[in-house]
Image (cartoon, rainbow, N blue to C red; front, top):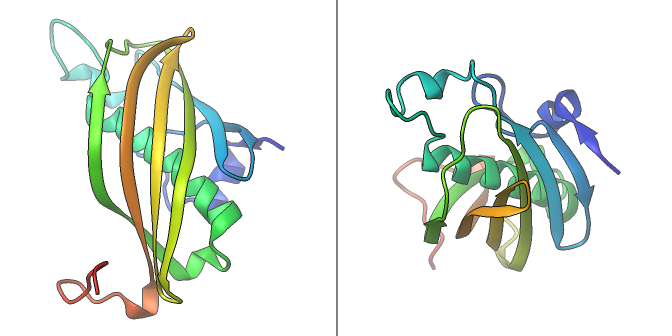
Length: 161
């Protein structure tokens, strides 16, 4: 089953200009794939870098994280709208080649493990990759902390017991 941009916006709490996922093309038990089509008009290309326009690495990782949290919301967390999905750890990122205006970024992610700390807190460890024309551009390993909204109090929560 695939999901188009408008369907994605019903699941993820993002909208333009901070939605970096145009379509989810495949979703399985542990893996997900999709894409994001960059454009010459994307706001971040105007200033990064002025004489060598490339997509900021942090936004590539954000696209991979959005794809991953879409999977977690659809496959792992019941009543996902009752939870916050937060960046927890970036274990490592490699940027192998730049991504340019007009590139279509093929996104892929795999949930390596899913830990339920308790009914209110969970952690997902993820491996994710970004490709353009089958060339690996970025590989990232990161964790997402999932916490029930009713339990979230800024500066007073922790994923650790």
